Structure formats: structure tokens, C-alpha cells
Length: 299
Image 1 (cartoon, helix red, strand yellow):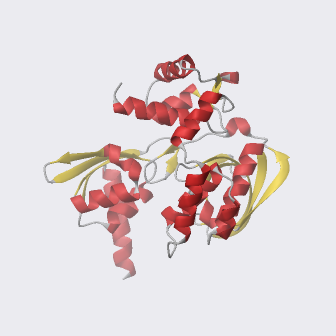
Image 2 (cartoon, one colour):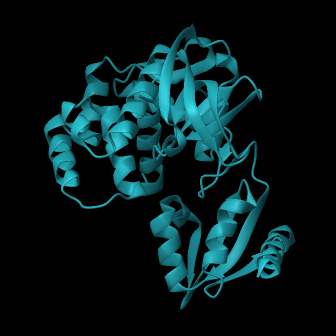
């Protein structure tokens, strides 16, 4: 069995061990395979003793079985190991997005009193409440949410149902706009779990998410470009999921990355314009030209 297949199956196992159920179509889209391949993976899991809950055409791993428990012990830190990691992190001066996301992720997997002593206590408490709301399937009010899109600070009533893989944001259904969207953890002042249960569970759908963490119902384009080693290193370090789209050619690197929005990749390219040569699509090239013209006009 090749490494890519093994990695994909392990990722699928861990995804199915969460609180949310997924349809075959969702899983096939997420891992870029057909539904028959997902069915073969599920059959393999069952053949080695895992119990798959498949009510209503959706799938989730039954986490109360010994096999699932062994899986979590293998792939997750023990409480003692995670406790040591948290103590070590507390000694690190300053705050970084990676440090804060790791604290929040560990807190979601484990319930430590020591987290109350961390500097990012408010973010940790917000993650705890969101995790509880998802587990209990409760509607939630985001208090004083700072929206970059609308340039407003308002309370938002939503239904949280899944975290991003890096735990920087939470996926929620917003009844006001009738869409599923991301809400950044860092922009939430506080959380109030409401007594109401989810009303729109069938609409809790994850859209396509590109490596720059932008979302859309489907990719709008595939961006092709040539990068220097410097740009390639920064791309992979800042956006680890991009590595699968990087190809080395002698002394330079090329990318062909599907994107949900030009803003995410645009910020990266404009910050390294001397190290990135964009080839296509024309729509993205025009997007960059407009951004550069606006910058020059302001000066």
C-alpha cells in the first residue's frame, strides 16, 4: 500500500472519529477520490474491527469501541504528554498564531485546568464553549464579533458544527445569510451557548477550502506560477497543505493550486512579488494588476 493511500486512510479515520457525520459525496470530495474508493476504505475499517455508524446515509466512527480508543492513543498525545507540551509552551515569550492554535487544539482534545493559566485564556475558553456547543448541538451567540467583510462589530447567532483543521476558525451555519461560513476564533470576544438546539442541521455543509484558508462552493480557478526557493519555503511553512501542489524543476519550483478566492493567494504573491512569477489564469493576473494600481494610486 503506497504512502499516499495510507496517509489518506489515517486522515479519514481521524475525521470520522469526530462528532460530525459525513456523506460519501462529502468524503469523496474532501479526499479527491470517487465514492467507490471511500466505500472500499470503510469496508477495510470494518474488516479490522472498527464500527462505522452509517445511519441515514452518513458515516461516523463509533468512538466507544476498543479499536477506536487504540487509534486515538496512537495518533493523539497522552494527557501527560500534552500537559508537558502546554507547560513548555507557557515558557515561550510572546504570542504567535501557531502557538495559540496548538493551545486551542490541545484543549479541544483534552480538558486541562492548567489551560486557565495560559496567557490566551479568553481564546481557550471560547474554544471550550464552541466545542461544547458542537457536542451538544446547540445554537450559539458570538458576542461582539469583529467582521472584516462588513466592517462591523455585532452579536451573531449561529450553529457551530466543525473546526478548521488548524483550529483558527469554526464552521457555522448562519441563518441570517442562509450559508455556512467561517468565523475566526481571534475575532470573537465571547461566547454564549443558547438553550435552543440546532434547527438547520441538514444545511451544515462544508464548502471547498483552499490551502490559503479561503472558502467557496467550488474552486474558481487553478493558479499556476513559478517560485524561487525562498518563496517556496515560505509558502510551505505558512500554508503546509500547499506542499502537495509544488513541483521542483531544476533550480526553481512550480505550483498549480486550485483556489476559492484570489484574495488569499493574492496576499502571498504581492508580499513576494520579486520571487513569484504568475503564469495563469488571466483573471488572477488582472486581480494583481488592480491591486498594484490601487497601491500606486494611494501613494
